[in-house]
Length: 278
Image 1 (cartoon, rainbow, N blue to C red):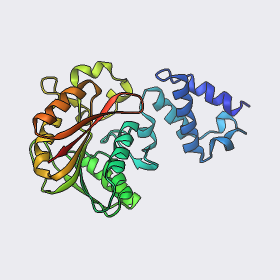
Image 2 (image 1 turned 90 degrees about the horizontal axis):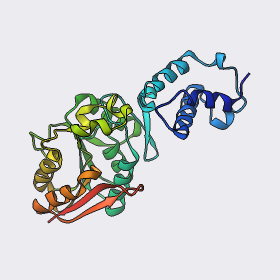
Image 3 (image 1 turned 45 degrees about the horizontal axis):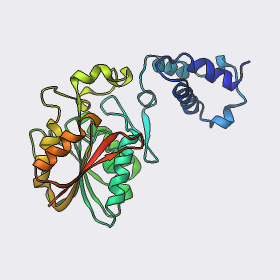
Image 4 (image 1 turned 45 degrees about the vertical axis):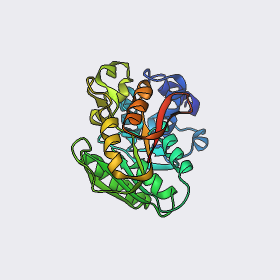
């Protein structure tokens, strides 16, 4: 009979793609999910042979680099659990910081908000739940992602209107927005080799990558269309590629936005940009 800590150590050592701390965290998450117990309750452990077969199956998937959120079918975001599938990106900490910035900068009730490239719906759902009397829309080009977003909204009792739209080709049928937010595809294909394989191999490339010859295409198009979507005094919020912060700022200023500001995340990386439309 091994101890709980022996099991965590043994399994985490098999996850060579991750650091020791990350691997142990993933193993603990997997055990808690399958056994339905908190970590503190698992200290008095049972034999490894008594563990459910599905747990061993999921460990094998973890070894391939598949993100645990896809394995378990959910991921945390802003204190809530969101369903994720291979049609959606996994909600990330930087996006939580973007949402927190929007909430902090926009007090008051009744804001009209659009999220472009909504994925799981984590941005518009959270904004609807955190901002009183908000009228919130989320759009995506992927029907698979929209189905996930709608399920998340229903489960979390959020009122969000989801639309299918290719922002590069179409203008959403909305006007007088207070807030336009987007975490669009922004990684040039040439940078794919620099990314962790658990992102490249498993997350949807449609939501990740842009052409090398036009890497700012989404920022340019959304910035241009945002001038027709936003009311005077409306605010534009982007999650950005840290390597392109200066270029995106210049692009928005050229489009006529003012108070264009680059924001760093908690790790000191330039990952957000805000602008006013006047």
